[in-house]
Length: 136
Figure 1 (cartoon, rainbow, N blue to C red):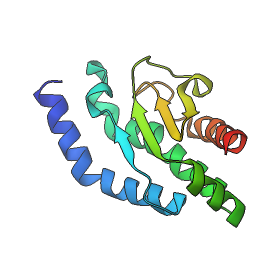
Figure 2: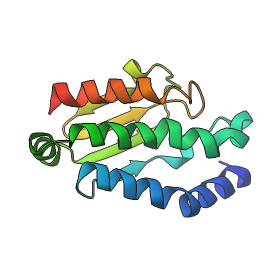
Figure 3: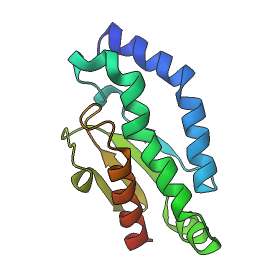
Figure 4: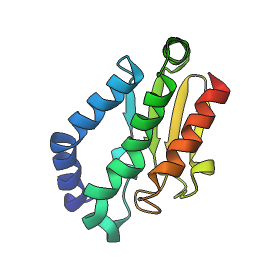
């Protein structure tokens, strides 16, 4: 990660991330730890698109899916009992939501390209809701 990426990450962490994190905590109903591998969330040629794509890929699907899951007390309880951490990374450059999400030992992982199919928030949300409903 070079200076450009470090600057972007610092700016994103200071300007957009606090609000997104607060929305995830509100949706979950508790302060779920976020383990984000910032240094892996880059493809150099797309740095100019990340302010738009990061929220759509890495945060909005969690906010929407967790809101859906916690719509009733049963969902709130199941999530609080099972979800220990959200892990965000990009090790495989996945762009298909079915391959990008996993849930194991209380860790909900999103391993997704930082740019591919950014606007397809609904598909990522649906896959995530299905995954959680089947594993909580």
